[in-house]
Length: 504
Image 1 (cartoon, rainbow, N blue to C red):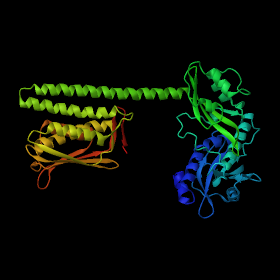
Image 2: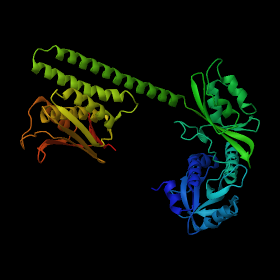
Image 3: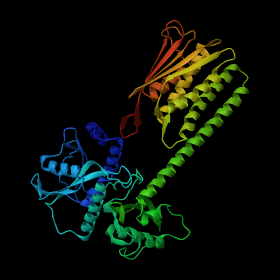
Image 4: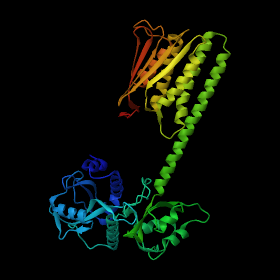
């Protein structure tokens, strides 16, 4: 399905500022639909003097009119005149009589979408918002429904005058952002509560307020709730006075309530506010647990890295004290392998994600290998081309260790006693990673592969753990090239089932 940006851009009649405005308005589509108990559709003009739907939101507390999304559809004939009039005149246009949609009586309201270009100026009309109310389930409205509808009418007026959405309001709300159904408080211009939904009252009761909210100043209510000498959200005073479109958390008695304020204006003059509230205690606890777990995982990686570096240091000391070249070489290789694994854990300890930017890891591994593997009579120049990209830690450790072995072999055996180059070429695709390690040394006889421990380690890591393939062959002229081909799939070999997902 096309995105709002794609649909609007395709019409060629809207600027980037218009698209951003429509995005912010569509982001509050659920709020508008829940307040109006109606479907909300956003339309933008097309090049052929029609309108196309770019966003559609269904109400969560009422029956929807549209079984299927109408995003991408052109405006239907029965709504076209009403939508065109609202767009051309820049005023709200209501249907004169009930509009029948698939044998269901409806009421349609067309609201021009105004975008404020400059403070105090006439808003530029960039689209139309339609409200489709289902009259088939009409019943005597409750006080809450009447208040919600009044709030919706006031917000629709702000949409037409360019006062809503407010681009100064914070975007990308934290998980658990309050909705109209979670709790709604209506404030007058002085910050006094004129209406509080049952859910809103329950949330404040859990915070420790035992009286009625209506008729009370919300600032005084919150002041009485907050514990003495307790730190609180700095934006809280702005939110509870209803003066700015902001969000804040209110905490008391182990309960956390998230608040969002929407100031109500009539042609720029503040007339009150809507305060949405939601008990997010459990959500905040889950967020804190995730933060704690992330910190614990990072600390574990950090300690593993430190322990591996300690082991590498012990191996280095033991190698220096060895009396035979064979023992010294074996310990030095073991030290190098442990150090390569430590580099991966060091990278994982720096972030929250269990993914690794492998190019950074390999750069550090390559530097380590080139320094340790080079003999006094060997001078190796290493070059890396291409990119490895981001890999899960399950891939990073075995791949780093395998490449450590291959580069070590290229330096120690391919370039033994002379000067030369070692080139590492990485080619990353959507579902595969190919790596070639090429040296300019003497090369292996075609078809002959080493049988040492390093070769066995590489085979085990690439074929066994990563499910890839590995091939050794001699480059035309001189040198050896080793090609690794790895499918980018993470395989969970749990006893229950094997799950495979492609890494992008």
